[in-house]
Amino acid sequence: MCGIAGIVDLGGNAVEPSDISRLTRLIAHRGPFGEGTWFSPDRTLAFGHRRLAIIDPGEGGYQPMLSADGRYVIVFNGEIYNFLELRRELEAQGAVFRSESDTEVILAAWEAWREDMLPRFNGMWALAIFDTSTRELFLARDRFGIKPLLYTMSPERFVFASEQRALVRSGLIDPSVDLEVARRLLLDAFGIEGSERTLFRQVRRLQAGHCMWLRQGKVSVRRWWRTVDHLPSVPTTESERVARFRELFQDAVALRMRSDVPIGTCLSGGFDSSAVICTMAAHEQAGMGPRDSTAWRHAFVATFPGALNDERPMAEEAAAWAKVEPTFLEIGQADALTDLDRILDDLDDVYISLPSAVWLIYRQLRQNDVTVSLDGHGADELMGAYLQEGQTFAFRIRNAAEDLASRSPLARRGVDFLRMLALKRQGVYFLRGGLRDLPASLPLVAEDDVLPREWGGLNRRLYRMFHSTVLPTILRNFDRLSMAHGIEVRMPFMDWRLVTYTMALPESSKSADGYTKAVARRAMANLMPESIRTARRKVGFNSPMPEWLNGALAGWTADLLAREVPAFAELVDETALRRAVSRLTASKTWDWEAVGRIWPYLNMKWMLARYA
Image (cartoon, rainbow, N blue to C red):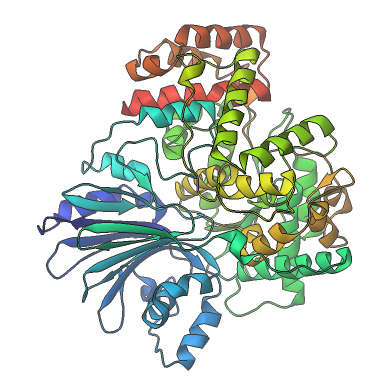
């Protein structure tokens, strides 16, 4: 896990060492264990790398890494969990390895299979490989976009990096904000990350499951992974379906315990993270495999004393089941302003809440010298969680809307229109302009995939949430906030085998008897605390925003709204926004609904004040 960067001068001039050094320093937090650069023989291409040493932490894992014959050069961010199996396969074909790293396995896989190596990988990655013979550059991102890859291209140069702020602050591009994207973010905070575009005009995102070639100054991009094309046949009986899910999940956890350094988990007390830590304990009891970290008994729990989203008792119960002594981090009103500007800067985008809790818990891991965390991300979007089936009317309306939205761009536009009307009716829509000025939607990865005709609204909604909207945004947040402290996050629920299998299951395996994640809950019977396995309450891992906005954040919010930011005033009816915020603050009636609707405006104003 690392930070990667690169510059290609398209005019044939030499890349300035100061340019690649500056770009690499801007992602230094992603790799605190070392820096490396490499220049092509004619110096028209430069790679930069910041290292977070997890697999083969010695000299053998240094990057940029060259193939044995010097023809190929790679910079790589991520982990290939099945690297041991691939290494054995490649050795059988004659490959000789000099290190114990997964990066060298990628180089050997490239020499053997070229682009066909990608479907063989089980992992998360953003990578770039340069061929010194053909002078071609290849870049690729993992199936679901767990690891980021941002780039910009002009007539003068092609530049890529692991974070958009590195590109924006590098001095190599125009840092102007894309106000069209900004408007879209304020209508739908989950409607951007699955697209190619970003908040900055010149920064583009290589989308999940895509790869790219730079040949003779021209870029070509293609989508190499489409989940719907890989759905397996599933067993006919529910008991067999549950058994297969259990098998896949246990193997996904086991693979992600491969590490040459200590690992742990962020434990919330909810079903997802509890299932992960309990399965880690079960894997140790069954027998650890080669390269598995035996130093795994590290659980970090964020607690919110007095707040509605505190799950400390459940986290304690899960930790006791796994025989782990947890480390607790109490987060309260005093933390509302702690490192606030740095947290927003590390997030470097617009979201529906202030992610202080996430940032603080990963800082705690770093302070305890644990650099890998197995977390439960992806389960909600894979099997449902945000709306319980018990909320019958809302549940059915949301599924019906997604059923329509997944079938045509016109229907998606209609859903946007209804969303705007609902926000106006609630008094929380502050964008300038009338109904004709509805922000345009952006093309999102996977949203036009042709799904099985027999799928209903729930499966269609989950497919879109997983690939196009909610999960890409969450993955972005957790990547930036964990890597701000040099922490690698691994996600067993996002193992591609488990994802394709679960996607193929009928809706009754995901939502049944008033429960979401039905197949996973059944699979974990007798493998975790029953009270957590059968709990219906869903609590997101968020900072206690209502309490903070009703208290410690009130002054910061007022000061922010009083600032003059012309780009924000161009977008937003600030008088109406200030009125709504003042009313909520004076009456201390901030709740999660108000936070989700209004915080993006506050976050956006902060961003525009910094960049516009």
